[in-house]
Image (cartoon, rainbow over all chains, first blue to last red; front, top):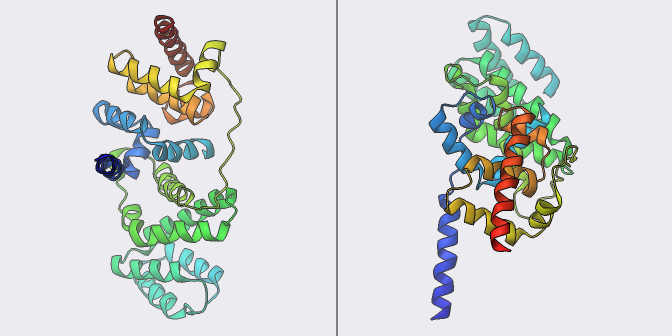
Length: 65
Length: 221
């Protein structure tokens, strides 16, 4: 019973990870240039709040500008 | 063929007319010696031949390569990193790079930087990667006693953030600022650049977040 429960949790984690689709390169570029529309900007901010990879990309670009 | 000669010919083609471009691609393709490390060049020339647009493809390729070389310097396995980035660009993103749409408003330079940088980050995030991360000096620190105590304990930080988020007392932008500053440990200057705001805006936001945290912590105590 416990084993099944753990398997379910692991499957859910894997599914969640797969579902985390990163922001496209063009949207990241528009975001850092301050050219995104309000709605898209809010979506990018919500994604960045949970995605370390996209935060790292933007930080590296900001650092090397 | 020597890579430098190929780059020179590519640049020459860049300044010439279409017929010359076409001939140049054919010549360059024939000239690549299989034993040299010119696999990217071969892909670029294939792409140029398909698109009949050597100037744009070549310009994008050269700029991406220069950017990748500059950025991969912070990596221990410089060669491995640059090969990974350029291969990814050639295989999956050359079209993305060359079909960049200016009308959307992003700067071409920013876009290429993002394309290259995201491949470097993907390289660094692979399991067992030997990538050496860039160190961010915390030149402007905003940590009062209370926030310092809270952020030291990740569980407490997560608990308070989730609690504030559930009661809609903290915005996604504030959570992002919090994570960038205290979890990823970037400087205020970098955070301001990422959000395309000035540092004053970030300080004000942090002040607000601290107020909210203080209020929430007080109710816990």
